[in-house]
Length: 137
Image (cartoon, rainbow, N blue to C red; front, side, top):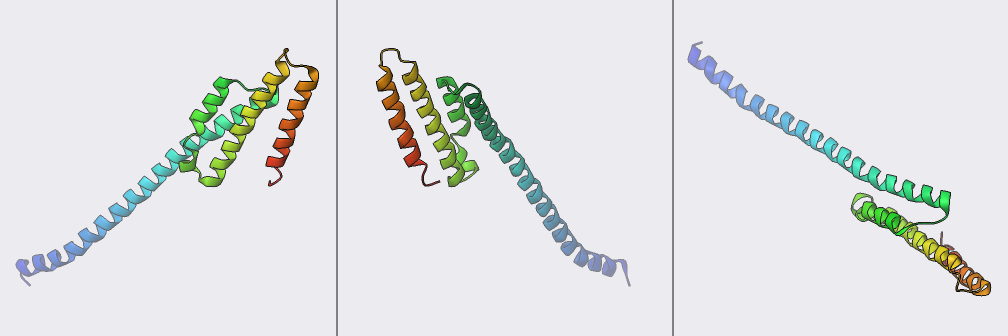
């Protein structure tokens, strides 16, 4: 066997080896990109979770919510439909709606211009509405 024949045989094997190596590198890049996507989604999802826990902790401690807290919650959760899907996004919107309702009721209870009877009636109506809206749960 001459050197020319050996080089032709090696060249024949070299092409599939290079192709297999290229496929392996592409597969490794795919795995790395997928893991980076998961990590990025985790960070963004955790930001939503943190905003939710912060809002709920504040409500549990003070039974009130400020406009700034609602804005911060909205800012952190406004892209939740892209991060979680429809069900979680709807749940977060429901929490936001309930927090706004709590804020409204707290302002009514603090309003000194309303009589005690008017305050009580407003709270009862809002509570009934809350119960009707949550019967489906």
